[in-house]
Amino acid sequence: MHRELIPTLEEKARNLRVSIIKTLHRSQSGHTGGSLSAIDLITALYFHTLRHRPAEPAWDGRDRFVLCKGHAAPAQYVALAEAGYFPKEDLMMLRRLGSHLQGHPDSKQTPGVDVCTGSLGQGLSQACGIALGLRLDGGDRRVYALMGDGELQEGQVWEAAMSAAHFRLDNLCAIVDANGLQIDGEVAKIMGVEPLGDKFRAFGWHVIEIDGHDLGQILAAYAHAATVKMKPTMIIARTVKGKGVSFFENKAAYHGVTPSDEELPRALYCLGCGE
Amino acid sequence: MTQMAATRDAYGTTLVELGEENPAVVVLDADLSGSTKTGLFAKRFPERFFNMGIAEANMVGTAAGLAAAGKIPFVSTFAIFAAGRAWEQIRQSVAYPKANVKIVPTHGGVTVGEDGASHQSVEDIAIMRAIPNMTVIVPADAVETAAAVRAVAAFKGPVYLRLGRNKVPTIFDDSYRFEIGKGTVLVQGSDLTFVTTGLMTAQALIAAERLKKVGISARVLHLATIKPLDGDLLLDAALETGAIVTGEEHSIVGGLGGAVAEFLAEQAPTPLVRVGVNDRFGTSGKAEELLKYFGLTHEGLEEAAHRVLERKGAR
Ligand SMILES: Cc1ncc(C[n+]2csc(CCOP(=O)(O)OP(=O)(O)O)c2C)c(N)n1
Ligand SMILES: [Mg+2]
Image 1 (cartoon, rainbow over the protein chains, first blue to last red):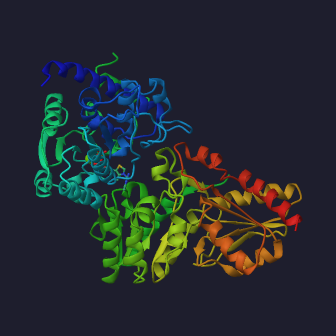
Image 2: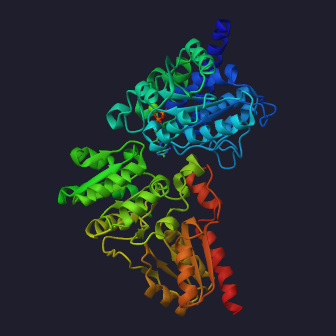
Image 3: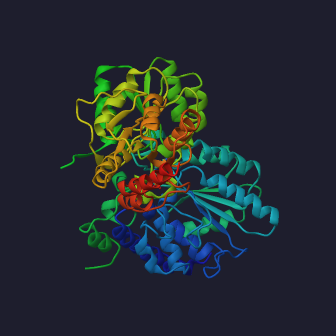
């Protein structure tokens, strides 16, 4: 494992958090908490694990990423911009009429986005289909799918989980951003989904549980998943919703609320910028 | 000054009143109780509120079961996830057995705004209307919503009552009597009729006013109930004004415009222009911008009025 990469990736993730905050402050619409909880997982993918060519988004040899929890689009968009898929200035047009950066990922409009999501529960099925298709063509291309823990309440997720194991999709690695919160409150209080590890193991998956903000653990989990044979891998990443901005952390209220003018400098300060 | 109020707010408060009056009223939501305003009921009657999590299909099936056990379930989430995600559950478990389930989604149409196409339901009226035994209602304002919520609670059978996200002008006052299946002529006119539903009715009132100034007499027929369609008032409008413009915050395919087109083609062929989302998906933007972008405005209706009058004159 590339230990020496970790500080660089941590710095990248910090910068992307700053970018998320600035983007959402500008748009005054979008999902703050779930973007911040997912950004370390996404940073590790785009700047280490995924094989992709920002200058050639449709490159046939690319690995695929499906943002099943499509409301975290800002996290994917800042990573795509940072990687060079489109100019960073575009981020300032997030959610505006005519922008290619739609409220939820749109593969027709945004370079680097492969799948349309936004309706929760549908992404893993599409990831399974991509994994089946890539496998038919041969080669070692892999598929990564990032879900929310509230999203796991959708029945379709479990239909997909069943089929991924049935088809022995070892080129599929799914990740749960297990931040414990959804819109109306705590996942455990609204409709409990635990014990996740046991559930996915019972469905025939290889399960890895990690701290979803520890880049060392994240890189190790992605690397390990790639070695698992005959089974799909589920990474249960324990995360903090709103991670990085103390007054957003673990607060369901900041699911779909953007930083106000007053909160912006304080949020940036938490991320090590500003006075 | 026109008063502005959101239909979903009227829903939330009326549900609480219904909960006080009738212990059989139960409410289900799918992790959107703050947005749909069922949270007010949840707070007042926690034991009769079920947050089903992000699981709309199971929510609808559970509601059907609650109805089979004698309850009056109100089911809420965004329109796309109610009508769209749970369509076949609504068809099989609710409509086929005529279960007494009230599907009351909020965030219908493009005024969902910035969330974009994935969250903007512009097909729900069409797909709900296609199901036998289903009643489909889209109120124009908060006053009508409160009345409609009470009416559907009293009505026995499945209902789809579509509400919106944003504040809309209040056009009715307390003297208004809502009746399921009955339209209302809000403005009399003889040259053409605007047949509108939901937030487009307020736009039709403005359009009629402005057309009057250029010598065009437009009738405004508000159809809150799209199914069953008020054939009597529609037939009068067709025969007496000879030109129809429909308006809805929905696709022109299969919704109010579709229902009116079907009716007119068989009963009284009449020049017709449908104003709605032109068979395309929504997009991100501010609600007001999107209404303009898709032509869901009084200007859009006026332009359609001129077009339909040209065709009427050419006959
Ligand atoms: C099918 C569907 N139902 C409802 C919603 C509305 N919605 C958007 S985000 C969200 C909560 C998601 O919670 P979770 O999956 O835990 O995401 P995170 O906490 O990572 O933001 C809901 C209910 C949706 N997008 N799709
Ligand atoms: Mg969550």
